[in-house]
Length: 265
Image 1 (tube, rainbow, N blue to C red):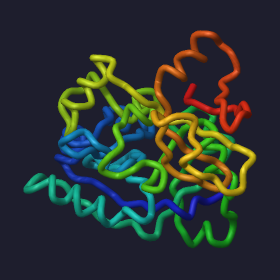
Image 2 (tube, rainbow, N blue to C red):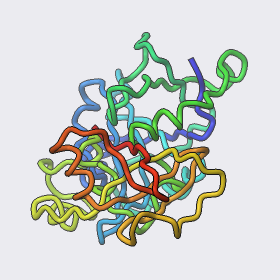
Image 3 (cartoon, one colour):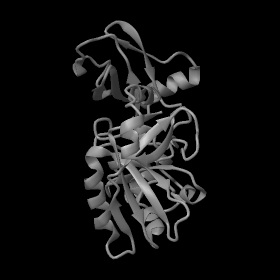
């Protein structure tokens, strides 16, 4: 078991909190009432990703209550944005600085399945004073996650620019197309139903020490970031579809070499 030091937690509760969240975030949060975790986003009215996060139910509460697991650098921004949207709703948003995220390959008591991909480890929220003494940091988690093409946080998802479907969020359960309205829903639904997805996230691990974004295979690729030894790119969707249809090993020709790339499946 390992902790994730780049994650922070806060709480949302109150008699109108379920309806409030259901109306603003991208996912259908109904699974929270069944004791399951939910991955979701908050979008701009133009359908661009502002924040991504996971939600966990707090069971045995009188009113609906959930915990929000977000990138540590964005916690207070996200709290401020949600507070702005709630207006006079009977919703309480409070910091939970004493809590942190623990991951485990086995589903022990209190652990939730990560809804973004079945190969990701299970997650649990615990007290920080326990984690500091007993559980080390997991330095391999993020490379494993990116190998599955599950992006998170501001260094991997360009805030205010990224479209959810570019990041496979129709597959990772971040976005619901059946629950009804949410902020940015009209743009997102139009892209999805009209099959207007132009690019998708891929990750590669080239054998280079100094990556030059100008060396990308063609101008239709977009460089996102270099995380450790993994490069994040937005690639034309037709390239991915070609390998999905042929069932061949997904490769890119780069600097006269063929390099394997990963996509979400």
